[in-house]
Length: 118
Image (cartoon, rainbow, N blue to C red):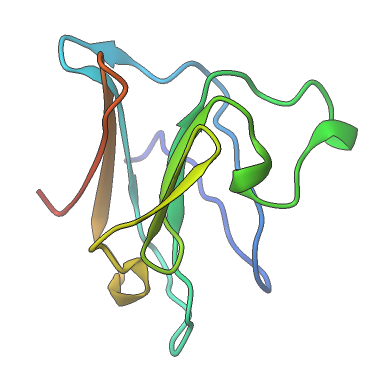
């Protein structure tokens, strides 16, 4: 949207944090992003998720999402990271295209779900 913000990956890896709290709806915590550019022939893809707490400072920032305690993230190379545990999933974000919309929900029981264009 016109009020949206843009995060761009230069190279590999990286973390982006929003500037507010993820909105809570009746179903749980929900947000979405739109893909504006893709890296062709990449093994990994977008990882999207939430953490209960943002690192206190840049010095506390982990190198990747799996370094965040109390967090849920999905994507990578077909994996999900949920509170310290890696799980294989069916979604391969490397297949995302420009203008795809990726939606992420953590329901009130702690189950994470992701949708593409849906």
